Image (cartoon, rainbow, N blue to C red; front, side, top):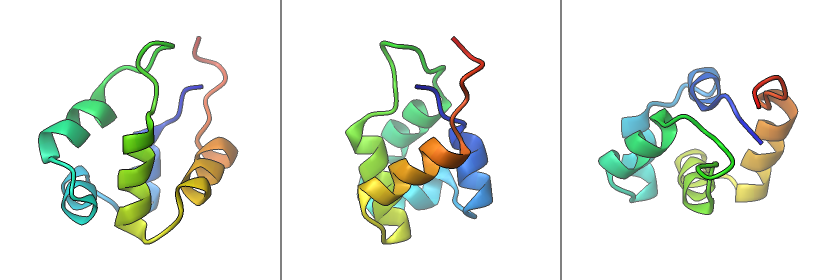
Length: 77
């Protein structure tokens, strides 16, 4: 699965800095993760979902639901 993380961040008024600060994960870790090209080997991981959830005071399943509904890109393979 490939998600448009940058569109998600923009639509939710989030920055990588804010996600890193609010989640407790390092900026470099989150920056590398959100800016990498996603492939089968480098997909969105649990840490990324946890960071997004913490930054928005949501559960990880809520973030994943939104990503799957609104930011899933099935055209990229």
